[in-house]
Amino acid sequence: MPFLGQDWRSPGDQWVRTKEGWERLKLWRIKVFENLNESILARLIRLAVLNFEGENDNDQYTHQPRIHFIKTLSRERKVVTTLSESFILLDMTGAVKDIRRFNYVKKILHVLLSKSLVNMSGTSQKYIFSILDEMVIQVVKTKNNTKAMSDLLDCATNSLNDGRYSHIGCTTLWNKHFQAVQRMKNKLNGCKTFMRKEDGKPTISDLPEDCIRCILERLADHKDVVHTGMTKSSIFHITESQLIWKHMSFFHFTDRQLLTFVPDQLGIDEDFINWKHIYRKCFLRYGRKEIYADTLAICLHCDNIFWKSIGHPCISKEEPAARILQPEAFLKLFNF
Image (cartoon, rainbow, N blue to C red; front, side, top):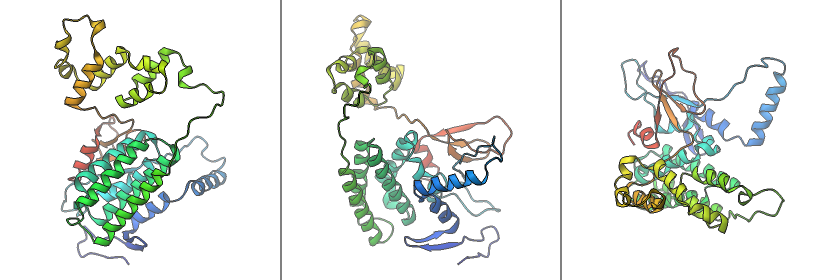
């Protein structure tokens, strides 16, 4: 039933009742399309292509998830942008299907689960756990990021236990979150990774040593380098080379941070500097630099938040200008 407020600046929203509770109609319509499975979407796209075949052959439309960020109230507008609304309009559920955006969404959920879950509304909580469920589905399907997903579910369990008596919302909803997380864990535990069968195709060990070194140097996490070296003795020899750890040290840490430990090695020839030891010390003191293949950004002209790799239709005719939003900076816009 539509609700019309007395204030013309905020006439209210239309709400619709779903099996999960009441939701705003304009957001519910977007969620309906997000929840369509891949086969239905493929069929709809195929039918659309057939209907418009021969028309606008040179035009290609790309969906650009975005949201106009409104932080403060004004005399003309009494509506602000909420976190739950941004999750839907930025297509966070669909973003986890893109490997470039998976880690970014994972970091956002980790910050929310570890610091702000007990203070979030029931609607925002449901969106978070629906994104978690989609992430588990993608991990089981692709067999990627299983350890990171397991850590995220453990973080969710700890937050639910800590906020059992201090959360916002009813106890029934909180218990549903417990059941949902346990169901996700069971699904993730049932995901088994099998050794690749002999198919005659080349593997990483068949590549030249220089190619393997270039691949390893592009891994952001040092644990991945170490684990890769454990797979074969020839690769282990490459992962222990000082050149890789030197490049990783300069990539993750600034010159000032490195100089904290490099002076201990100044009296040694550069070829004999233990860069793996320096990297370990810098990592323990400063941590690892967070790397994301794709991030959110906010336009400096129209205040639209969008995915950097997809872009957005800006109303300004000036040269494009945007500010990259790290996960913490994105949540800070909504006071989280």
